[in-house]
Image (cartoon, rainbow over all chains, first blue to last red; front, side):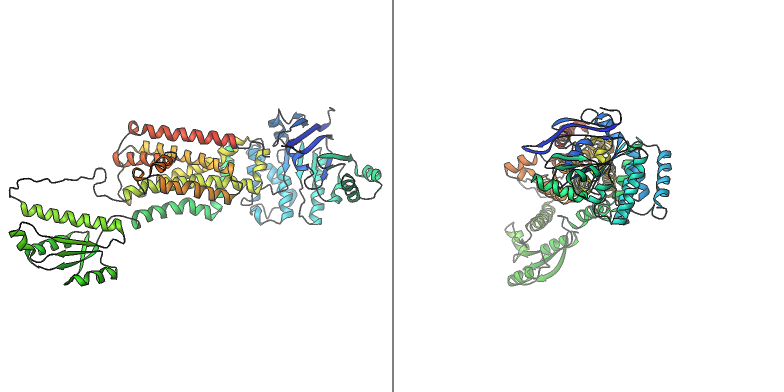
Length: 244
Length: 368
């Protein structure tokens, strides 16, 4: 394993009874990389991701995240990752500030630290007027931006984003990806699943899962070249059709 | 520790900002205690009765007077013929009719016995029974007065004393029961709902990805409800003492400790339900059907366990509420100490450990 690899996956497999949800996948993700994890619904993306964030046990194989083994050092893994789920990750009946304080708290940040960070975050997102309003009253795009910032509160080395922009308008999606790039430039590794193929173009490298296996893994440019098409959308469709 | 306080704070925000749960938590206990205490009662007070007096002599007058001056009855009419009895009952107001035979006094003197018929409206059998018992004892009383100074050859006078609840106040029976129901409901239902809510919204996943371990998550969710349930228990006990004048003969400390034990027992049931139920709705239904009904029907709160068929009696043993009701009745009414309720206490502790063990086993640490 090279030192710069933040995620190292070897022959990772997850079986539910006879059904193999994730079939022997291997890949690695480097520091500061934006790694797109693509696949149709039911291809096994979410299951693979759950193994990496330590809430599902692999049936076979090995994975290290931020240098820690997901099976034996789950606690260390959890301290070093941020996670934002496709379902909403904040509490709607708490204000933005209260959410920040709560999540800062469970990641063991000191009160002074939380205060400083929440101020910085509110400034950065321009949320002065909304800091004390309930999260439930915010538009979806704003919620997701806040959720992303909250997932970064404890300075994780890697952030896992599970379909973060589902249902969000194109402009906000754009802004969201600007936030992602900003973090990647700071050295944070981004592991993102998405169904939007234009977003796949933004990634440094992309893997495409079909029926539990990784069928393609390269930069968007190389993938397009390999499949002789001119958009990720076509790569995706070609791949999925070939397999079927 | 800081994490923990933050977690509890967050839980209180949830509770305080949700009016429905706030009402269930604090409105319901008070409403229920008041309802059971005032409205639902099997005592009789100022029952309307009518008199059919065929003899109108000194003895019947004395008896009627005695009845009229008791607080249990008020005489709402005199009728003069048997035919009027049924129409009187039909109107619904009159619950009993006293029918004195002709020549009551004369018979009493010459034959040494006279008859009075007590007719009660038995559409409500319990009340009818109580009314006839009360009238019976007034008559018995009068008879003893008549016999005073006379030397009767044989006489058996039953002297009944209702121990621990001499006035047969039904509040004494309802308060422990209502307290049990409320603690069970608040603790089990509210915790199971609040845990499944996080599952439903997806925030449970976020919590499990955080460095908190599942055990800390559950404890964090449960502790606020322990506090709220203890407050509820205190409110109910204060209401029963000051509003219903119910005595607490035994140690308040023991009462508090046993209530806390029962609260923890109910919470562990709530956690168990939340491991089975996937949605808030399912959690609510399971709590209502699986906990409320057995608590009301099989705990001995309303229906005495000793008169149930054997299979139900056996089932009642696995209901924690049954043991808790025995304990609090013992402490509040009989004033007993731990020496007399240790067996029930041990059973409750055992059940709690069993429920917690089962939940830990069922709880999917790694959400599939």
